[in-house]
Length: 244
Ligand SMILES: Nc1ncnc2c1ncn2[C@@H]1O[C@H](COP(=O)(O)OP(=O)(O)OP(=O)(O)O)[C@@H](O)[C@H]1O
Ligand SMILES: [Mg+2]
Image (cartoon, rainbow, N blue to C red; front, side, top):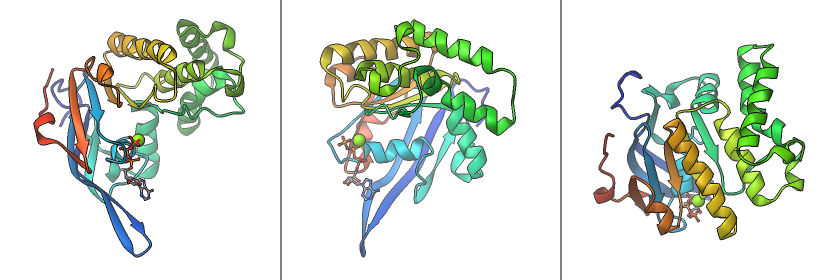
């Protein structure tokens, strides 16, 4: 499938199976999942705790290799790529936001935001555009209301502030896809609301494909499509793709 075809899914999972060896037993968590995510759509993934949502996102996000199945990002089957090529796709085409932020404790807000850009620069042997990237990171953080937190490390920021830095980090490379695993699950409702407004505003402005895992029905109602995962399978009635 070609990148230039607007109706092609930007992210496609086919037949994903994932199991874990526990002692001499095998725990099968994902039982053959298909899912298409289209450009610009907001897709919500729901399901009970333990259903396999995070396991699935880790496979989709190229962090965890499935036992079977493929993940295509913009038409490229990424689990067939070399580790270096796959890391490049993960770094520049997929943005991630996690429940517990996962910022690096020893880096300040600007440095954390710049991390994917630094990795990309090192991989491509780029030099010289550091100033422009830094200015971009500062602009994003300022737009996100963090102008006076630029030099704060995570330990000196609130949860909501840390999550806004994590969103800036996820978007610094201008990826077409943003994957968020319970991004407000660790925040109080008011703070969570503000983080969500930011997330949805960026989704809209950038035309991002957003895959959002949440337990919150209100949040689901703001998405274009909701799919439900139950015992490692996506319920057939909710999985029908809607090309936008
Ligand atoms: N590395 C692993 N080794 C063994 N079992 C695992 C591993 N990772 C996940 N599991 C199991 O897979 C199942 C699904 O876990 P997962 O974290 O994907 O659920 P989830 O849907 O994200 O739940 P929650 O809503 O609580 O975040 C659980 O039973 C979990 O114990
Ligand atoms: Mg989870």
